Length: 489
Image (cartoon, rainbow, N blue to C red; front, side, top):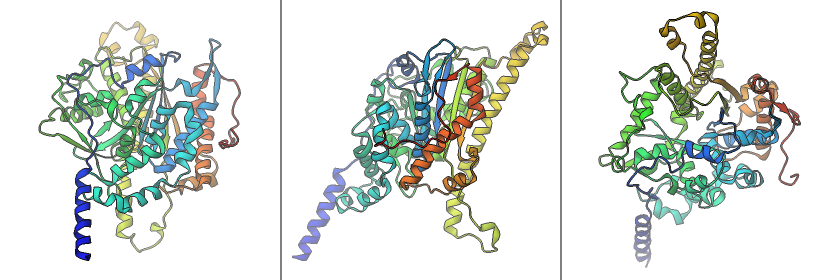
């Protein structure tokens, strides 16, 4: 009798394992650049936005810590109303054109893209103040999922995607974002084969010859937050080379590293990574892990775009953003670095501690480099504009001189929203000690949200933006204002 039960159990597990497969992103037979979830299409919906200004929010990774901190930025921009020179009252949140999100930050970005202002009524209870990590562990350990998890095609990350769908996204796909009227949301994951960044927008899925609109938001969030070892890679199908797709002409200039206009280091690498997918017949699958491995700040795509604009401008070629005169980038970095006592003792850290720290070192260093590159670009463009406007250049008849200083006529604003910007040491120490996980105490969530608003209002770069754009607060929010609870609203 016992033997019969064992055989029946094993058979049931095998049947269950074969019954589960990763969801398949469908192919497209012909790319249509006028359709799909793209930046240009989003701009058509943002009718009231100032088209000469592009506002970007870049949400970093960091589990619930990142999700709560980035949510605090949305809350702050929602509260801030300003009076423009033309007399129009503007809510800053409505001026956002693009939100990039990585890992924990991708949940806030995707959820805002889906719900808009409704997010402020549901996000705390649905996600931020929920033990998402505990619920996920229970599901993975539940016997009802054992059969599926025996399959190579159904992993812990697919279980995670199901959970995220049930508690937050409720069956929504990128088609729902495409039908909406909000900013472009760009969640990012890492292709573990190439080490390159993969952005969930149709301009990337064109290279895969696949329809992004059919992809569930929960799978994008699961891929963006698939921490290696803790979670498995999320698999997508690649049909590249089957839909007669050609790289857009303005991007083709960066396909060849030898002849590409400079600066172009990041753009060349990105194009190479994308063109890798056009051999779909030989490489039919893509395996995605945590986006933090390739871009923890969600800033690399922004840097590449700025680099492309500068290179094409110096080469005298047109770009799709030639009409833009101001780019505002909120770099929302929830990085924490809990203190250790390693440098006070002759005893070396444990092997596990070294492995964990080693994984974060290149991520943190690249994040630092990314922010500094943004600041360098800002200053370089500003200096070149001053030179162009100088009397010496105006009097010069040398076309080479004019070409060399022909950087984009754009003013950049790099607004740093990070714990390091806090002036309250006690608050910094508290937030800097918070772990990277998908569960935090409610107090930590609230303090993260409040800190984001304080940092924005006290930012000298944000104040420079207000002055340059001649914006006046309708009612300036107090810098120490704590976020309201759902009951208070």
